Length: 126
Ligand SMILES: [Zn+2]
Image (cartoon, rainbow, N blue to C red; front, side, top):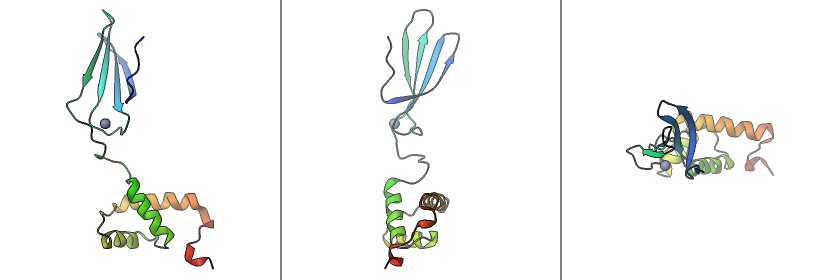
């Protein structure tokens, strides 16, 4: 029996004249440029492994914010800084790479939706 490659996630399989081809994405980050595909040959049951000419890159084309950035935003929110302009200013003051505005506002609205209306900043609790 053939075993599924461990660090790869099956994207899709397609049947061709030569056999079935299975395309895999890197498990760590599906935007990683390194991909593999397997050809299960029809005529002799051979399995061939093909790789893209790339190396792992898990920071590239990251969709959304890095966890460290999210953490920083969460901290600022706790401190009552909840406007995108205020958050970006805080990042600049700390000399940290600032999040893209679009990503920031989508993260903020997601966070707000999670917290609902019951959210109060620590300064309003007395
Ligand atoms: Zn990778």
